[in-house]
Picture (cartoon, rainbow, N blue to C red):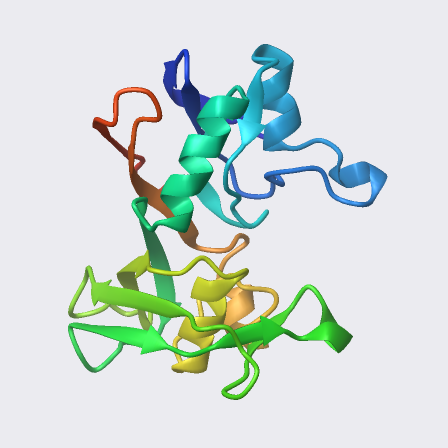
Length: 212
């Protein structure tokens, strides 16, 4: 498996480009102990987790260096001062150029780790989306879109897109069998990350091109 590579490093934080298939943090089973966090901490012992990406999702992943930086960055996430953008390839072509999905989400306990839309008990969840290829990908019945989550629920982007009838290609949890089979990996990549530096407060803006 390809290793995460560092796209930003300073005394207070680091950002890596995580490959698809690598967990952000250790899982419960022995085969999931190898993860982005353990690999980063082998190089920088003070690295601490700030946020996570799904194992199937690739892209920019932020780590703090030290407890103080972690506290400041966690607060930035809580205050929604962190902006994230993703690129995905979805089945079909949405009829509009852009839109928002506001569907509350909750864990689907009998089928964990799946999440589901629950209008009564779900937590508020909001995703903005925009077409990157308005005509779709020629001859493929799919479209490249940019996603900007406002909230950060587990599997939010995957559930939201499936809920509006445009599941992500390669999604083994929320897509139909044919859409899942269209790609050997989930076509979802964390392509942009912007946040206030925990020491200087200056805005750090990073980008990673989607590998698909």
